[in-house]
Image (cartoon, rainbow, N blue to C red; front, side, top):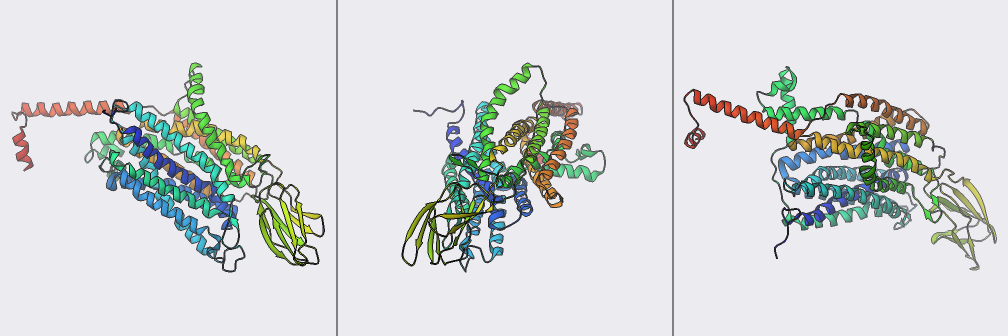
Length: 600
């Protein structure tokens, strides 16, 4: 029986959806897995302060969104999308493995005291791993979506749109899963000599999943439609602009002596949109702080939700959950209602609203900056006030033998009540007890002096609840829906058919510049209070949003298809004029023989 085509086209797209979506959803899942835990790894494992952790985090994210330009050039000019995805996925996987190795506490802990003896080794390996991951994810981001789109024919526009809808859903599903399971991996206790938070597991699992997704992607190789590299449009546009500038005349029009009128017109269309991109990085400067400043803010809060203990980095799950829920609601309900009210809510107006909403989210975040205890779990230590040596076990963790009138080191535990088991070494007498309930951010010294346990509260628990972060996550998710989703659609609709990759690279570059802004503000800011920095960012975005609204007011929307049709019509007209000129001069039409002779 003949296999039916999907939507009237080749029979492959349903299968290709599986292979392509597996590759990108896995790779995006790995990226979110890494980003979700990265700032905590910097702060608690490498022992960096808030400012340095934030700077390195946003530097990494910025590089991740700069390298897509490099990936696009490699794919379009040299290797093609398929080979580029495979090659840079390998680079990505190697980087993940190096990150997992760098987070092994026992790697340099020769004296087995629970602290690495040579932090320089761990820092060096971490930076090498992050660089490779940035190069890998940068090459994957612009290629997988375009590669998936290549599998469809021109008449399969409906099926292609369906693919991109599922593609966007897969990205957010991967993000949701990642932000849930990563803190669970990190929260496990592991180690050869001393038990620590299991960052090797948090980094190692993504490396294994990436290897699996790469195998799945390669397995569908024979089914793919592989477009050969045909030269990078981004390079052509850059050269066209450079040539026009060198002429020192009237901008792009004076590049016509070397470049076609079609390329000049398309470049002008792209530059008009890129000009609108100038204010956009400020939005991303605020949005991407969900993974840095907001996560650090959550470490100063109480994550006790009753039956569920929420880790600080798990609060980021609020964003993808809301995205999955809100995108269809906004598209199917909110926008149609606005249209029925006869309000011309254009894409640029939506993006302006998104910028103002993001500023509001940071004002909301500023109201929660009260506590100052950067402790993810509760901390316990024991003091043996008995005359004999005792062996202490708390919630399955062995503190070892504790001499009389001596203290143990602090160990981290999840919130709640814990079982204590004490064995007196001299006479093997035992004692079972249960600790008091303790909260996030607290530290207690438990004194063993007899039948009862005594407590000294070294650090008070966090009093501000993590649930108070939900409003700021809700507001910034609303901002993302009307800004990011609309911005991608706007960029696609205003770009010529052969330059959509150029604007895609430009859009990703705004994310990179946004993270660079965070680096500059975090490094230069002398504000001692975190709430003041949040207000500063909100004020900056508010000012930039007003500028963007003015720019959007003067922007004129174009129809690239209509412009392309006009260009084709002009080219046909010029061709006929040349043929008419040839007839007037008695030359007549050029025959195939004449063409061959001229070429010879």
